[in-house]
Length: 166
Image (cartoon, rainbow, N blue to C red; front, side, top):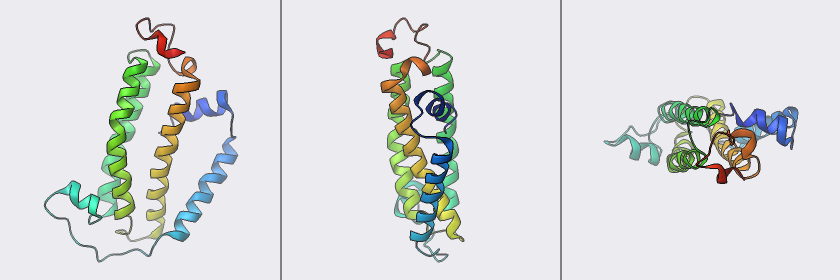
């Protein structure tokens, strides 16, 4: 997350400084930590289906958070790297992000429901904050796609998809 989008945000867009985003980040963390319910260790165990149990909030937070977080970040990094070097067209980059949107919605709901299934409230707040960071990342990617495609994509090399760079 944020490998390519955040540096572009700071250098070319310049809507906020790194210090301002850091203050917002820590402010959100404090709000999520204060508003989080007390941690619960007596949650129901997983049923037959992992996906349904995670959706219902019956799985430990680590088992919901880490697998999908690693898969999501590796997918986003691969798509951005391929688009940056010109091996992925602009419309294909859009398709990858659109395909990842439904699993992200499932993941966010599962994280918020399973976040009480941890030992410390700090992990609950961190997991919820990182789910909000995914939506911020998607917002940055949408801003880059709409307003700054020539900066991110190699539009000179994309003859077939050059119309998407405007």
